[in-house]
Image (cartoon, rainbow, N blue to C red; front, side, top):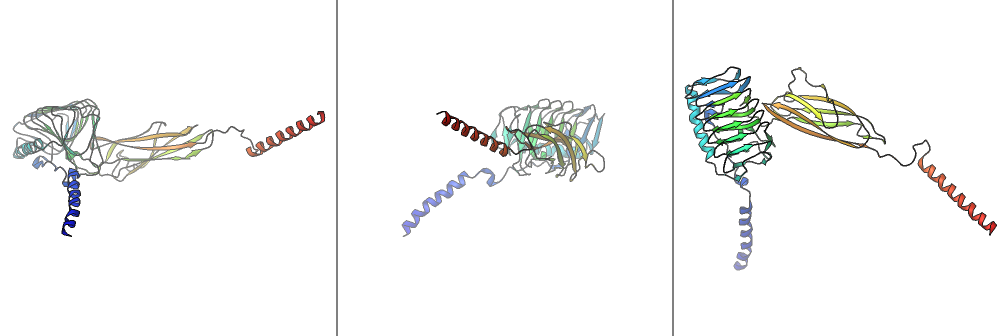
Length: 379
């Protein structure tokens, strides 16, 4: 009996071993975040200088060490200045620690040099060379707001003009880290997310927006009419839209439909520049909801829009809402279909179609009977 029992245990142990081997790495613990230490509150920290051209808004502290030249003409700073002081000095020490930590993480996945067009889950990524972004790059936290994304370059980071990083399914800017052993350049009108650990310089070109940190260990940070925001690490920067149609179906020939668009902010970050568009209807008109008239979609607030269209066939159209939250453009979509009944082959009269059909059958039968009778008489 003992031999039989042992024989039965062998397959069971094999199954258990295979289960452990097959289990995904996330089951044993996700990638830990990078400890920023005292750099956490800084939007910009540099070694030599910080300069600006145009109108720039910085939310978060600004620090320099050992340099002392902060050229702040045109800068609106929502935060503290630490220029060549003890706070900035300690922040630089903590930056070196954070840089070394992120740079030393084992790579979990290889990526191409250009990250544009990719949708990536949590992990540590390297191209084996430089990094760039053209178009839109998407970071998917897969429902985990603590998901960590680390990108390791071997030299530079360069983003193209109008490039964009989109965060979905709970991804947060404060869990995205970029290791740059040389210099970083963010292109004109680009939208960037995360903490840049650059060994030397960071250049932010005209109109670029950053949600995160610009941390240049030994060099300078150059700004040009930018928005740099290192604010609350919100787990929910959400803007939602729903769309309804009245009526939802139309008779043959079509008719007029009124669409109602409801935009809500279920998150914790307010939105400016809220715009609703529809790929088949224009204009979409704001109706109500902005109770204090500040044109800011506050958390918990609901705005209503409407549009009217005349349809002659079944139509599916897509509404898109965009808003700027913490310097980052966020979007959502909603789709609605209105059915239009197909046109009939029979005439549209007051007489029911089946009555017309029955009358036709009767006339046909009478004609057939008359022909048979005629044939008999002449036969």
